[in-house]
Image (cartoon, rainbow, N blue to C red):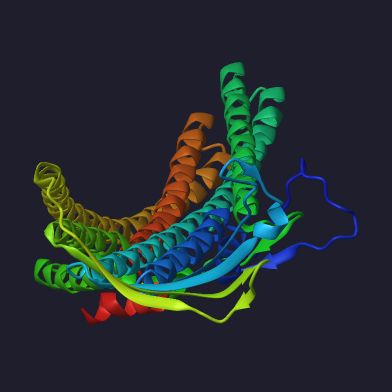
Length: 443
């Protein structure tokens, strides 16, 4: 397939600009850089890290300092000069939680889980952006290939019409055959215009995802690089397919973001349940305090200072509230366990579907290719007979329709196979297609 120059006539482009060359890897990089959702996740991660630090700081001693000042204006119903009674002092204190049933460490662990959960969400969005970019890139190439096929079909229809027109004028065919050739040409022109529209829409979406303006020149996919894996997957045995599923499932459970997020949610629910249990434990705090830097108008600065240590303990007695809170935490824990199991079952189904779809698409590509070879030869044969006035306009129209449908089917199946690989790559959290192909072979 030749390099595809995609030009959108309704986009405003400066006359001196050259088309921007773009391959799939470059499109992915631009898609990731242009993603607003990933940028928001980056901010969310930073915010969650700050929350985690705040939880850590809450475990450290709390230090506070204060000051006070006072003046009197009345004593024993006698007015005083407030300045003469001015006094001020400074205080400080250090408070440390000595015991609260280990709640601080559990809260720190929950904060760490929250941060990791946001990172997992960002990873899932990372693969979502890559998938969206891949699909948009493939959509442009597929639309361009379809346009090329429709253009070829339109040219063939125009040739057939020109021949039919000459024969109709010379009385070699009737008016009905000529109108059939004219109808076929109009139908091909309409399909060609629809293909142009689809290409324009696909290109606009790719530009939006990558942030590119102007014209772009896409590097086509080298389908010859997939020949071996197509042949292997199309003819895979049931035993090999089962082994492939088992190996891919291990990778999914180890790397899939949705599976990891579900596991973190279960851990967080368990920690919250444990934290609620610790609410029954008493809390003991110790405070070291002192005063100094006293000053008064009457006595000036004073050097006397006081200090001490206080220990305070609280014991919860509202057990009805604690029991209710504990029951809600237990329900949340059970829900997290159900969600984990549902995620596991859903991923199993997704993986089975993705693998079966990949096998089917591989077989479809090879079958469509063979069909295209036969229909192309058939069309060339009928076209030659039509030139020799041995085939009718209807025969040529049928052969042309069969040929263009086979060509479009081959194009569609080829890119559907690439999309099935993208789905497998996302499920296994692999951003390198070469590693995915290696897994398909080595499993």
